[in-house]
Length: 147
Image (cartoon, rainbow, N blue to C red; front, side, top):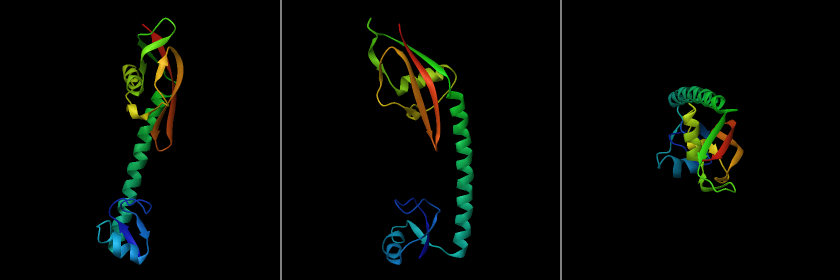
């Protein structure tokens, strides 16, 4: 049975997708729960317009992400913080501190885009990667200096 999904359904598809599902799944789950409608020719045309619009919005978003990535790529960011004589920091430098340091250089990104396995706890220079989603990534250098 052909249905148009009204909401995202795990392992089936996203809202607006036209999917072929088994009759029992459609009649017993998707339709009663309001997750899908039977695909009529009129609804199929509406769904195709919705999908085209969603695709254009996604392409625009990816272009915006690539612009942010190019602004971050290759940049060098400095953070000054208190440290011991042997180079160990009294605290740590995490995603939010790195995002603030980037913002002070004129580039604003979401802290969640910064990829860290663990916070930095010593002085030095480190490569950092930012993952903006949709396959858009950028690398930059973080230099942590003692005050």
